[in-house]
Length: 351
Image (tube, rainbow, N blue to C red; front, side, top):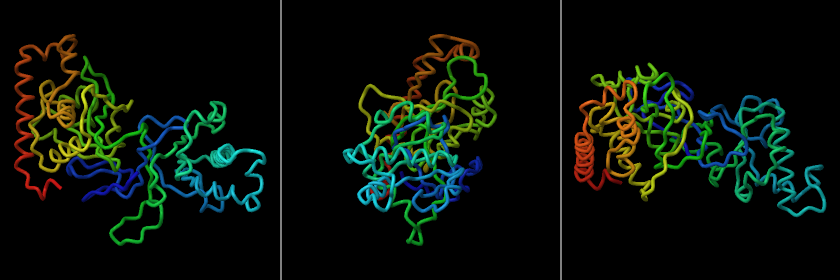
């Protein structure tokens, strides 16, 4: 969980402006990406203003908010049951008693119809999804609940004292746990012929995704085709929500060979800030080529190879005359260009 910031960022929840590649809509937002879902999270994640449960005197203040529950405070209240009658059941071991206390608090908050609930604090680290029964999770009336695995979250929720630190008014919970350096992908909305139906990017933390993107607002095959036009496709930095705006089913792509997350983020950020990455080509240099290059230093696309092998629909027709040699040559050129850019950067810029 961190705070996302960017030059010229748009306000939280607003769509990024395609005319400014540095815009993304998570500025001034608490991002919860290192979490374990206790109940289902919406497929595109969820975003709303946030509140701290222990600071709300009226449960009506919890409605339509992402509610943070400091489990450390619940633990302290459990140690002084006289101040919180009814929360501690006698004869239980401390861990079981705290779990029951959390359960009562979750049911109370869920009855106020919040957008989501985040359990945080060091004391919650000992709990896992399997510690709560399926019947209990159903009793939360479908309210998304996550266990944050970030031990610093309460520090970020404290009032900002530094002048250069923005006020964090919104909270974003990603639909699945993410870490910087993850190669993420999602399905593309619309009717797409063949296998090129996923969009790819690199998660770089702070709720941001760097991806090679064209005119996705058109949706489906039209959006993919429009990306070929001059100046349409570029390496962009957007929020996870913006990345998911024209798609669904966010997932992380796993690699058989070891990959360095730090190097992945460095390659993605360099391509974004320097805008050196070669022009878009649907079959020879698409968003997956870019993400694979960031992960491994080699530009490849498994969906292109699948489409070429299957030879279906428009993709099969377009593939005529595109040889494996041509694909390999472009991949080698991108890798060489990337190495050249890395060598040309001064030590000061590398930091």
